[in-house]
Image (cartoon, rainbow, N blue to C red; front, side, top):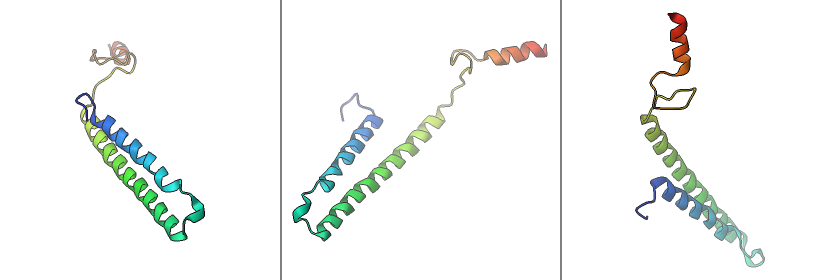
Length: 97
């Protein structure tokens, strides 16, 4: 891991590596391969997919927890965090007075 790389970037690189490794189990010369060898390779590919799903679920849970902690108030009109009262609230306050 390089100092500038984020955890998300490294997770995606690992997932990409695992996905490409599936080809090692599916691009066989089928003429000389027995039924049991094919089943074994399919089982290995299935294991990679299962592991990838676990990595993805773990990363999704981590990101959801992280992002949910950073709840920001953003104006729906200008999408800015720099104001505390958005235009629709100002309009509503003007109508109430």
